[in-house]
Amino acid sequence: MSANTPTMSSQRAAVVGETAPEQEEELVAYIHDLLEDDPMESLDLYRPGYLHPVVPGDIIRPSPSSCPNRPVDAPTGYRILHKLGHGGEGTVWIADALDVSERLVSLKIYSAHCSNAAEREARALRASMASPDDQWSEYVLPLLDSFTIRGPNGTHHVHITNVILPMMVRLSHFSADTKKDLVKGLARGLAHLHRSGFIHGDFHMGNIGCTLPPPFSSMTVYKVVQELRDYNVVMVLPRDPAHKGASVPTYLLGPCELYRCYVIYSKRVANWGPEARIFDLGNARAIGDGEDVAQDVRWACPPPEAAFAHYGLGGREILPTTATDVWCLGATITRMFSEVNLRTEIGILYMVDQARLDGVLPPAWRAFWETDPELCTRIGFVTPMQADKDWSKYRAQFMKQNPQANGANVDRLILLLRRMLALDSASRPSMEEVLADPWFADARSATADGDDAATPNIALPLSCEHRATTTSLCPSKLAR
Image (cartoon, rainbow, N blue to C red):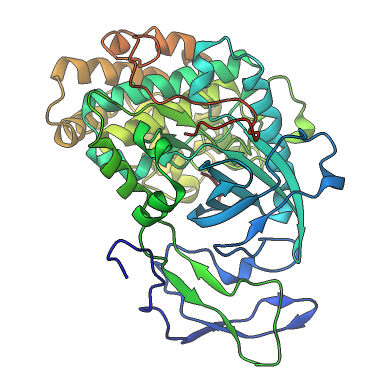
């Protein structure tokens, strides 16, 4: 067997722990060896109403009766090759399309309880794709195919998109200039969504990625799977040998080494740079949506108005807005350049993290802080002078993580971030105003500047006539 041939890892063959998910109204004990830091989803999520059990080699076929409007020339199904990741909304896999030669795609299977998120994402992506003449539409990952399947744990939405590399995987290796180029693409993608009448709603590091080098799209399925390397598996066995539950997979699988493909194929093309892609719009809302759709809002990095509504207004949920997208982009940029999360406190003290960066408490915030026993002692932390000191620390961290960056350029970035991260949403710039900021003046854009080596972001429906090629998932509510 070749050293490059993907194999099942035998390192995790031991079965030593146990879990007891409820399966088909009876309690079944399963043995499996899953460590706390394993990059795998919990086995407890494989039960009716939640995740669909999948392993490599499975064929995911849409049900014709449940997808009457699907194009007749769409692939009849998709074969699972490896895992890309998982999250709060479902699992994501790399697959090849049946009936379409050598076509690799990303296949997301939503948890049965996340059908609303799937429908929101599809609605937002279709609106984005309806404006193909907008050159900024390419920065939003297009929806190539969508359908539903029925499994032992319920009905699941399936979304097919291009394969991209999650930004977090590669971020520490990018230069300051590349990061700026990527940020410009992210800002353009959000501006395009806003023009299309939608708000992303949960923009953070886990929902952004970058394109893979062009050679990746021309490689055979066999060759790419070789590069994805071993399958890191954890076997799942019922304690009762007579029980064979359909709700759980035969084994849990860790994510593939997609980053390895990025490194290998990027060496085969000169003068190429990655482009940003925005994905995971399960929390997206249409501009003008009513308050009746606010009950299912989730935030990975809640903006100030969400934190204030939750803690200061009795647990109230608010809808995302274009202004919350701007704040979340600012928080993401800060993390991209500093590799530090803005959130250092948990619970209600998260409001202190947000307020310190602004330096001024709005009247409503001050009134609430004065009544809260935890916040009232920290009012003195929020002053313009303290904000200047905190931003000086961020500047030092920016320079440390990006030693090749120009100091004056970093100063311009910090001025922009202070505007984007304002507590008062009315004081924040629009996404168009963000893009007009002087910090972007020397940023490159592969599309706008005519970079022929840029990776295309194919937005055509996937069909048997289509031969070209090219993840995501959902976190937490606020807690006291």
